[in-house]
Amino acid sequence: MTEPASRLRAISPTLKLNLREGLIDSEEHGTLNEVLEGVTPREFERLLQSWEFDARPSQFPLWVEKQDWRTWLFLGGRGAGKTRAGAGWVRALALGLPEATNEPVGRIALIGETAADVREVMIEGVSGILRAHERSERPLYEASRKRVVWPNGAVAQAFSAEDPEALRGPQFDAAWCDELAKWRLAEETWDMLQFGLRLGSWPRQMITTTPRAVPLLKRLLTEPGTRQTHATTRENEENLAPAFLETVVRRYGGTRLGRQELDGEFIEERPDALWTRAIIERARIARAPALTRIVVAIDPPASSHKRADACGVVAAGIDAAGFVYVLADESLSAARPQRWAQVALALYHRLNADALVAEVNQGGEMVASVIAEADASVPVTSVRATRGKYLRAAPVAQLYEQKRVHHVGAFPALEDEMCAFGPEGLLNGRSPDRLDALVWAVTALALTPKAAEPRMRRV
Image (tube, rainbow, N blue to C red; front, side):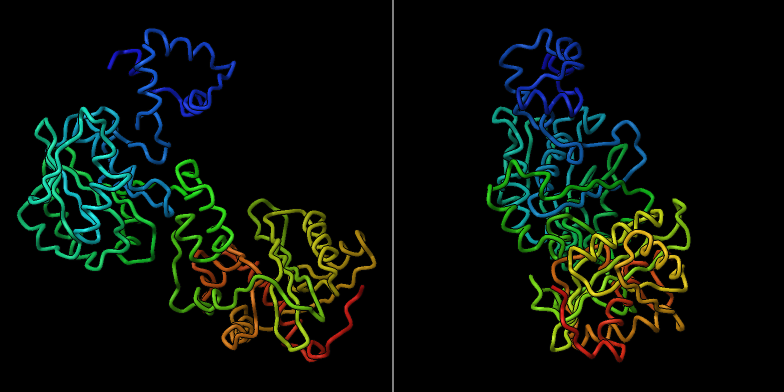
C-alpha cells in the first residue's frame, strides 16, 4: 500500500462518512485534497471497501500505542458487528497491521461457546475470519486440525468453551473469545486461557459478546486491565435486512430483552430487590383499557441545583376492576420548579387526568403553589411520607406480585430503579425519585380508601 493510501486509511471518521456517501465537507476540502494526492483510482476503490476504512470507531482496534490493557471487552446488541470486529482484529494481528499490533502475532486462540460456533461463526461465517480477508491474503482453514494458518506462519487454533481442558498445554500471544456470556463452563475455560496467554511482549484478548449478568463478565468489567467498547444493533443498520430493525424494535424496544439483545446493555438483577425483571416483563402490555381515574404523581427534589435529585413525574390510571396501569414516566433531572411543573401539567392535560399527587415532605406545598400559579384549575392532592421508602414501596410491589399492576409500554429508567431498589435503597446510593413517584401514584389509585371508589372520567 502506498504512502498516500496509508494516509487515506487514517483520516477522520467524519471524512470517511462523507467519502462513502459521496459528500465533501467544505471545511475539510483541503484535508481531502492532501489525502487523495497520489492515490490511484483502484487504490481508492479498494480502500472504500476495506475494513480499516469502513469500520466504526467501536469496532476498530484501540489503545495500540499505549499497552496498558489486557482485555478488550466489546459489548453489543445482536447484529451490531461484534463478530466482524473480532474477525478484523484477528486478521490485523496475524498480518501485523499497525492499527492493531506493533509486530505480527504468531499464535492466536479462538474460543466459542461450542466447536460448531467457532467453525460456523468465527471462522467460516458471513462475518468470520475467512470473509474478513481479501482473496489474495486469505488464510487456509485446516478443519481437521481445527486451525487457521496464514501464509506468514501465523496460526489461530479453535477451542470450545465446553472443553476447557483442551487449553492445557497450548500457549498464545492473543485470544478472541466470542459470546463469553453464553459459555457453559465460563470460569473454567477463562482460567485455562489465562495460563496459556503468555507469548510475545503484549499478551492480550478480545471478548465479543451480548451482555448478560454472569459472574465472569461482571468481574471483568471492574478489572483495571479491561478496556470496553459498545455498539447497538441500530448502529449496524446498513448491514441488516431492512425490515429487521423495524420488527424487533417494535416488539422488544425498551424491554429487558430488547435492551440486552438490541442495545447491548448490561442488565443486572439485585437479589434483595422488591421487583425483578421477570415480574415487570410479566406486567407489560401494549395498551390500557378504559380507565376510571388517572393521576400524575410528583416527587419533587429538595432543590434545583445541578447535583440535586431528579424530579419524579409518573402517571398511572385504574380501571373499574381495580387494575392499575402505569402510563408514563417523564421524570427529569435538576430542573427548576417552573420546568418540572410545566412537564407535569402537560402530562396531566394530555392524559385528561383527575389530579396531581405531590409529596409534602419534599416541598409539596411549594408544588401546589407552583402548579396553582401555572394553572389554578388543576387539583393537587398532597401526600405525606410517614414511613421509610422501602416500607412505602413494599405494598406496591405486592400488587405487582398479584398481577394487579401493568406497564403500558416500556420505561427503562424507572424499571432500572425498581430492580435496583432494596432495603438499603438504590445500589448507587442515589434517591429513587422515579420509583417514589410511581409508589405515590399507585398508592393514590389502589391503596387508599377513596381509591376504591371509581369516579366518572371528565370529558
